[in-house]
Image (tube, rainbow, N blue to C red; front, side):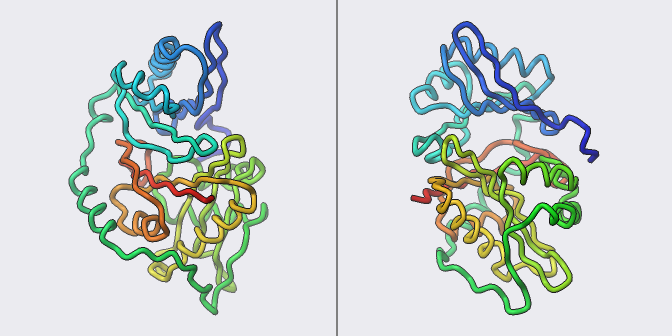
Length: 285
């Protein structure tokens, strides 16, 4: 995807009795409200207006604990809980839809079965060893091109333009940290942590491993490294959204001590369609 196409914009809107911080996410046809203050009635009405103006079919609001039931009373539904998101206080994912196809999950029962299989696995909190023929390190700006090639190879579509080296470099400059695993001649696995320093949380994301190197514990290795980096930066909570249909990624987070806190219906465009995403979270204190 060319880097000059507007895939999303982060905006702040100040009214007479409210402030809304939100992301217009055009790629995923959704409006994500990351924070707000003021009168809930006005905020809800304005959020619905913004979504309709831009023909976005899903809205989700990261609600404060004191407000989620008010959003519920207006017709929103609770899809998940970001544990510890606001400096240790929970954020409640309150969703609404403007399209029946977007609201309707096509694979919910299959995803439930996968989740039950994952939850029956043994926990593996120990940190694996780096295989002797590989090295692991913190990514640098000059790795952006190789990272974009890895994501292009793994994902047919992705919620953000990770197949664009310019975009990957931009995320690095804005504070996202990447760890990668490589052989002597190839980048084979990577994951990132998108840091929110204001609220001391981070999203563990952009997890990818070349098929030939899967089932070797590389992703657990990378998540361990990212968590250590986050703790050093005083980040107190981590969360991740994993495809409901992916046994492997859900297993990684469960086995590393993350708790399951809900499923977000058709939350983003990944692997060529809108998919349900499981929400995992963990305290790093």
